[in-house]
Length: 159
Ligand SMILES: Nc1nc2c(c(=O)[nH]1)N=C([C@H](O)[C@H](O)COP(=O)(O)OP(=O)(O)OP(=O)(O)O)CN2
Ligand SMILES: [Zn+2]
Image (cartoon, rainbow, N blue to C red; front, top):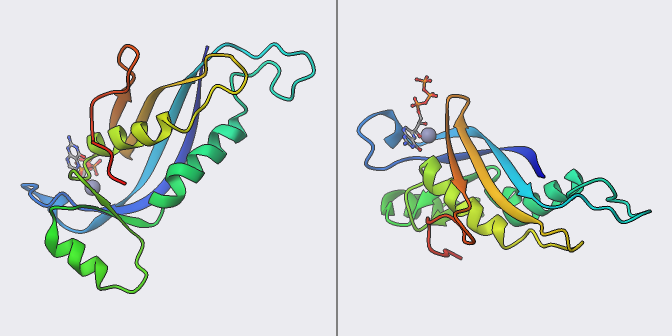
């Protein structure tokens, strides 16, 4: 069984070498769709009976490990020195420095890496993260999908 939880957050970014508009500082209302696989929990009397995972738990975990960190942050490539230094000059600015440029492909891969470690099989129902779909705009998105037994290739651990 697959279940999907959608969350939304706001963040700024730029693609420093983009040939057009996206090299400028700008922001998006990102939408994150988290798809988990697992067996339906059959434990009689359990609060999660009939579920793969309680959607509220899916949300709480995603917020704790990812969304609370990226929401209203500026997501910046570590090689984008001018912007990294500018943001560092702003007192207590919420900045996430990333090892790759913050395209939606790279952000989806990084989100998968972070979330994959966070969703644990607490009911022996083989819970696993299968896909992270990240919308940068309503028209543009990327899918990071589990390949075989491992996560998709993407960013190296950054923090
Ligand atoms: N493969 C990718 N291409 C682009 C990315 C990306 O992450 N991966 N990102 C951008 C920009 O960040 C930009 O914000 C997207 O802008 P745009 O293409 O204009 O998106 P819209 O949905 O607003 O475009 P419409 O044509 O108005 O639908 C660019 N490319
Ligand atoms: Zn953009």
